[in-house]
Length: 504
Image (cartoon, rainbow, N blue to C red):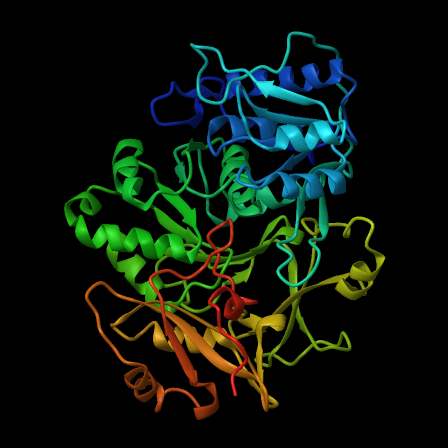
């Protein structure tokens, strides 16, 4: 029997152990989860949908979203989509993906219904019974024998974020998902005693693989929340007693603000670790998290094309390096130059990966595949270096590096410098178009509660910490910095979102 399929990952949990929980719902056991996934595959088979076919899933964050993903991915290809898209966005994604079916919540008025009907794609409602535990639902009554997929059959398909061009379609295989879930479960030393409080959206690789699938691989459990709500986080954590959670830096910052105001609640928590990924974690936030929750902070490095995890800081006291995304944790990692030659240790180049969790290639996009693969190595588009201990440091996204008249500026370096300033709660450094230089350095700043600081004071603060050309010429003070759908801060195009024109 093959051991590289998603359905194999669901076999680890004991029959009666909790697999999924949700606030105000009965728990779903591993036995019930396996039965649900098998039934869902049989229901799809009754309508002629099986391995090689795609099913789009448009459900609110929660247990049904998790079990729909697991059920579909364990037999065919799941295509989770953001439930907050507009009809025109659904039309684009559905036309691109060509799914055989769209699953929505019972009674949902989500605009995906109209978009699917216009394209002739059937829509099915996930019907949840009055006594169903968290995640259990049915599509229809008919069932038929389902087929077993092959390891190289597609299990998950997602689009890249597409900040600068048309989003690319990323197919991920059964073997990709199996490998990545195993990598993450090993990195985090997950056991059946672990319980994760999921705050990540389940239409994104981070929540799907790092939280849900890695937990299933270990026979551990996940609380499927309706999504991230900083005001409810501590109450949910006290109720659910999680051993860990994973989030993006903006989420951690919001949680820290709540924790500062509720020290008694924080004392009752008992996290084994806190995990951060999907964007660089400023060292100042790393330190605050470690001190606040008195546990290791595990920063990891992931992307959709790698089925999430590529590198991770290891567990164990003192083995985490603030500002570094850790050691290779699944695929091989090399730093290559533009010609595909390996860079000497400590020198900056493009982070490239090779391994069982890496996508076989973008769909219907030979140009992108030619640009992204060199001798079997996938080019991530990130700039970085490996230190003498083998830890990876991301110095910036190649497309986000600011070219100020030929002088290259890493926005991450500037961010990290100003995050040490007591008045700065959040900062995003970005490129501002400039008539003479091409690009100038600018920064959007959210001040800490009650703090006051001037643009000149920030410039003076950085004068002995950064070269003069790296110090932002312009600071924009805002109440909130625009974020993407997964909570990631968006650098590219930020000057337009903030209404800033070309600088003289």
